[in-house]
Length: 193
Image 1: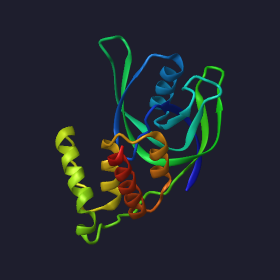
Image 2: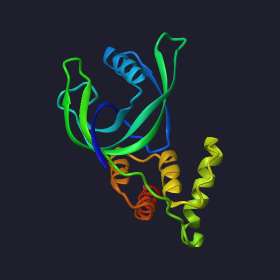
Image 3: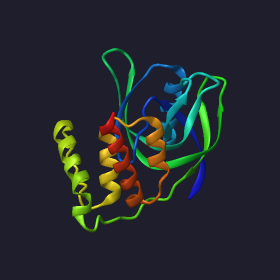
């Protein structure tokens, strides 16, 4: 695990490792963030907003997030800068401050990459596998995550309407099998609503 400083991009919904996201940028602080990240070939952090908003000094963010890397950029027809990013590494925020231009910057600890976690007896996870295939059919997602607990968990979390508190909890869990069980519990809670 290593520590580094990351600029933050707070969102109403967090992202999971491997997720792709398209963002439209128009505020100067985020245009500068994109320019700096492209020039230095480094990423930025995406975190879920706990309270407040991205430009409010009293805002609070969840402590877990994902670093994203810019994969592509383009000027959109509406004149805004569009960037495509992919989440690669989970992190935990150690400290956070807001710069004069409103950009949040955090000292983060990158969490270790996960090793493969075979599902073992697929019958124990058949409900989650079936749910993934049902969700993927509607989203056009083409990954087949049915062999690995980490990939299956992130694929489902990316497709479900999970709130930021639950996302933060999933991001903070380091054991893919425990995360899958936690996800199953959250799915059960969603089905009761």
